[in-house]
Image (cartoon, rainbow, N blue to C red):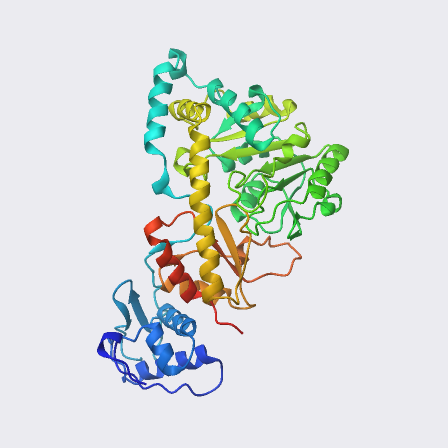
Length: 465
């Protein structure tokens, strides 16, 4: 093959031997580097040029480059291309080889799930709410904080959650916390017995439960959410679910299953821990209300501003059955140590004045456009990749062919992409067969960088089989 100077050095590569195109390309490049035909510092052709000359897919070239970079044969930096690494001469036979230091890749595009667009934080309206709230606040608000949270915020939340999520509560049943993880740690202090969880879910949520001495029992997850009919066999006393948008696979809990989990809780005295993940962001379906509205005495409802506004605010809330309020407040402590009073007062004004609704409508439109662009680009450039979980939320799951997830993650790192694989979300004791996939967040990249992030993502995906 040959390529012009603007595309890198001219190369002669013979893709011979066993294996697929990626394996044969990697073998040919290692041989060319090891023999000295490709000297240290030599710039290699871009994916498109080399793929065209060799008659293979450019995703194959991207994956080969990524793996060779991981092994230390190549180096790459955004904007400067891919080069042969400045490697030491091969050691003589019999000399001890030491493992290469891991290569750290700079993150250019953040596609990690669960994060909102930080640049979209509503600074002017938040500042206006802060001025109003501080002006109107009574002097006692700046004394020792009530562990339940400010009454202004609890009252605003009771009205807002009833109106938008179908939550049935009063302000006295709401306790403010610093986010879902903090709330779950508090609830763990009053739970007894095993806790059922979704087979696919966040590992650190499971860790919070196990660190509190609670056993977690996985429930099978399918397109309709967790299979709650498995609950009686687990012996669980509580179940943690993401009914509005299962994390990470994306389905909403089916109406029959919503009713069934409440029936289970009533019959056994159990509790549903409802993480209302992504409840505000829905695109292709009617709003799905909170399960809590079916039976407020059987559900602990969790919400936060981590995705609707910013995780930096450290503001969340628990809507509790009346019988648990005193125990949760006692577990939290005698004073507020977690959430600042000024932020609580500001959020109360932000909600009561309608700014929260306006911000959610604005961000729903932005995230929907990004979601639509993601699905359009994948349909055009990677039609063999199935995308799911896109009816709501800030992420999507890309289903990959079996055995390709790790190679795709290596290619992504090489391209400066930060994203998640699907396999770490699977409960270690689950009997579900593992699936290869990528969990792609589309909330974080700024608007001007989103198209370039999708270009890099397509290069990291495996070829069709």
